[in-house]
Length: 474
Ligand code: URP
Ligand code: ZN
Ligand code: ZN
Ligand code: ZN
Image 1 (cartoon, protein in one colour):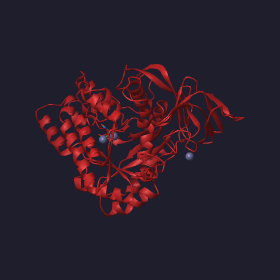
Image 2 (cartoon, rainbow, N blue to C red):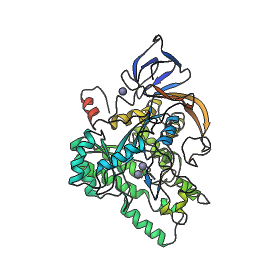
Image 3 (cartoon, helix red, strand yellow):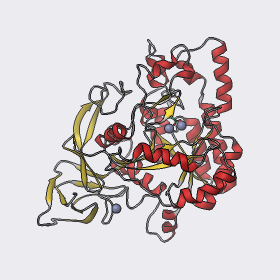
Image 4 (tube, helix red, strand yellow):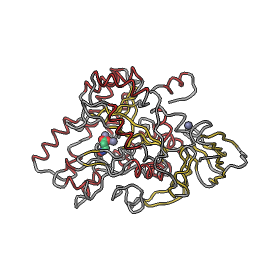
């Protein structure tokens, strides 16, 4: 039972404000915010010295996902426990579909993976690999009944997930008509395929060739193409895991022309660079992501884009594989290294420590990037993504002064390494509530597998309609 809880002495921070006030939680919701609230019988939670943030929302996770000949190490239980330790109270995971098979089967598979396991709330994006009569027939139900209002199209991973431009364009048109947001993995898969074959022919098999065969031009080109197709379809686009200046430029250019386009980056692109792939003894495999890590100077471009609003969100792209046993599948052939890394736990703290503490973004921007903007873009606001009366009581008590060293020996992900091993950060979640229930209390896990609820999301543009009435801005 969640009961009544009264949070006192904390500093509430939202995407727009920072102020001292008490928060009363009744059941799963916030029922009052104000000075010196009194609530006889309520459990008092002392938040002295802490910021009180809305629970973070991770817009990009791959839990229990088959990929690269293996399955991601973190499932919906270990992955969401780790997320909760990091201050994340909701995730949106990618539901993979198979060509020729009903969308409904794929969605059911994802419900089965998550239902009794997730400790925080969750929702799904749906992959669109083809667009035909059968898919078209199913989409209204996907949107209306499942509340899945974002579709993912891969422009890369040739012969695996990659869709052609006709499929992307058709998806953009349908999304516009039906109120969904199209997401793209923007890399030119055909060019990457060409460069990969060329590298292997020359005997270039080490992890660094993963990066060298996926150049920034391939990401910039695909991002620009997707932006143009979005403009032509008069639709809306969200570019996942933006890694480099070439892609930021294309997004900024399209935004400048009034295209409804949004961009996400990830902690790895803000903090790590291509040289990590050259670590000896195959250790470079730990740092294989697609898009790959870039030359270091790109990091400044990404930080500036977050600050200026040309990029709006930070996803973890959580896609964890053990170094021993899973990443090692690619010894002697970089194309067989499973792509991805563990990031769900440290996404929020890294952005706070490196972003807010170092003056690269403001604390309100931080909240917007990890929570509010995600809720608005993906149809969850104002139930999620803010601290307001009536909102779900998804709340993080965050100690901004606590110092910590990131390590696989202390993290809660199920994977055997951490890409940020040894990194010192300042600021960490102390307690985390999901719909009024503690999941983390004084840095201890007190949640329950299956407590997480599936979130049916609103159509894209609902909050934009409100903008015209000047109630909420997106
Ligand atoms: O390397 C990555 N990003 N792995 C996860 C799958 C994807 O492309 O997002
Ligand atoms: Zn991707
Ligand atoms: Zn991903
Ligand atoms: Zn609710």
